[in-house]
Picture 1: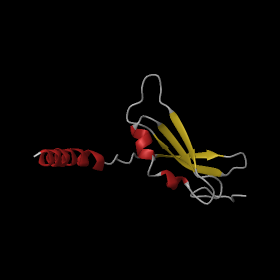
Picture 2: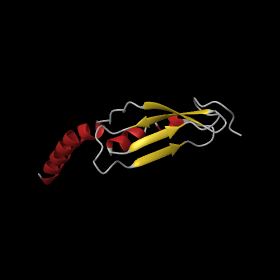
Picture 3: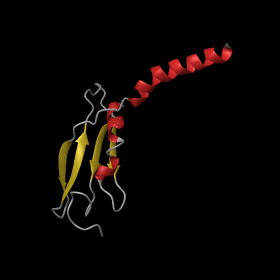
Length: 104
């Protein structure tokens, strides 16, 4: 009897919790940004803002990729940061992604 009750409780928990775990955070729409370096090269990036920003301001993250990568490498984590209220700026460094130039 106790085993059946325990199995029933586990089944109810799985049925109730699984849909909550399966919900994905919607990908926010970025604002394209360009910053001109001293030598004239345009560094390309994306700026993500939460839908509401508190009166005291929002926390901000600057994400910079590793060598042989691009700003797209952060695509899976950006929605969570924005959902948590962060402003996120992610850029392509020289010679990577959509930024021109060389990476030397």
